[in-house]
Amino acid sequence: MSTTKKVLLINTHLTYPNWSEGKLNDSFHQKAKEFFEVNNFEILETKVEDGYDANEEVEKHLEADIIILQTPINWFGAPWIYKKYADEVFNSGLMSKKFLSDDGRTREDPTRQYGTGGHLQGKKFMVSATWNAPKASFDDVNQVLFQGRSTADVLIQITSNYRFCGVDVVADYNCFDIFKDGDIVGDLENYPAHLKTVFGL
Image (tube, rainbow, N blue to C red; front, side, top):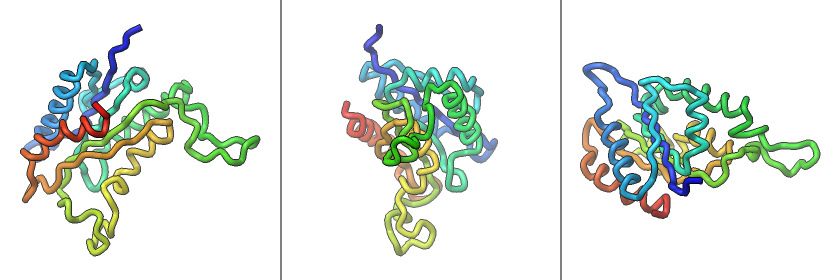
C-alpha cells in the first residue's frame, strides 16, 4: 500500500469571456500544486468548469489527505457550478455511504449531535478565495455589509459540507480587493507559508 500522501486541488473558477478569465485562480492553483509537489504529495486535480464524474470525485476525496478548493467569490459565494458539483459529489458520497451514513443523531443516544455521522475523519479541507471585497470589510462590527463577520463566517456554506462528513476545516486563505487596491503579488508569495502552517508541513 502506498504511503505517499495525496492532495486534491479543486478549481471552481467560472469563465466570463472578456471579464473574468480565471488567470488569478489558476495562479493560486498552480502555486499550491508546486508547494505540494515539493513536499512529495501526489497531486489529484479537478477543474470543475472542464467537467467531472461525481463518482470519480468521491474516490478522489477518499484518496486525498488534504482537499483545497480554489474559488473566486461571485456574489458572496462560490460560482454556481460549484454548488452543482457539491450537490452531485456529496449526494454520491451519501448514497454510497462512503462520505457518511447518516447525520449523526440516534434515537438510542440523544447526546449525539447533528453533523457527527461522517466517515472522512483525518482529512483536512481549506478554501483559498479571491475577493473584490477589501480585507477591512471583515471582522469589524462597524462595517455595513458583513457586520463583524469573518471570512470563515461567510464561507460556512462551503465548509459545512466537509465538516458534516467528518473533515477538519483549517483556516482559509484569501486574496482581497483584487480589482482595486489588493496585493496580488504579495498574496501569491505568501500562500506557501500559509499552506505550510495550516497543514503542519
